[in-house]
Length: 115
Image 1 (cartoon, one colour):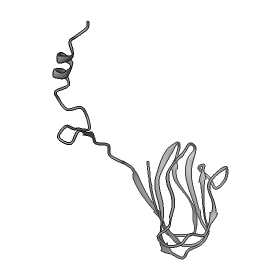
Image 2 (tube, rainbow, N blue to C red; image 1 turned 90 degrees about the vertical axis):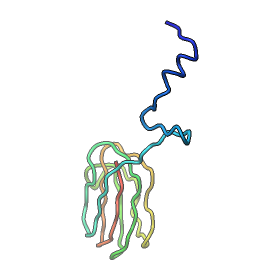
Image 3 (spheres, helix red, strand yellow; image 1 turned 60 degrees about the vertical axis):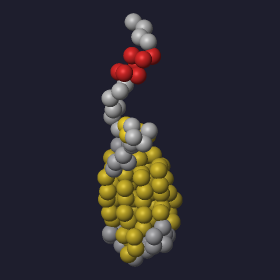
Image 4 (cartoon, rainbow, N blue to C red; image 1 turned 45 degrees about the vertical axis):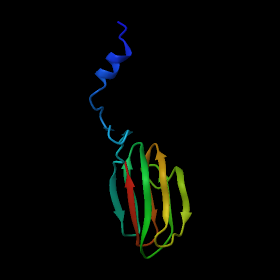
């Protein structure tokens, strides 16, 4: 049944999930999990599809890093082998479909934020 616009405004007088009426914006949280790598290893961070918020290099012994869209060190390469520098952001806002695996050739300290 059709309702006049005034009725619709009245019905939406309550807050929607995430709505900040005072500032006229919808609030969205960037949720995720964190992981760190501190050794030379092949590390599967997540199995299944997901999203990389960021992968940062904090320091350590800087050696080659390769990132795969897989649950193993094979398949689709997201980031080909690169030797990073301290403080470098390797990836940001990237989707993966099979999994996220990071191979470090040295004891680089890598911080991963993902969901």
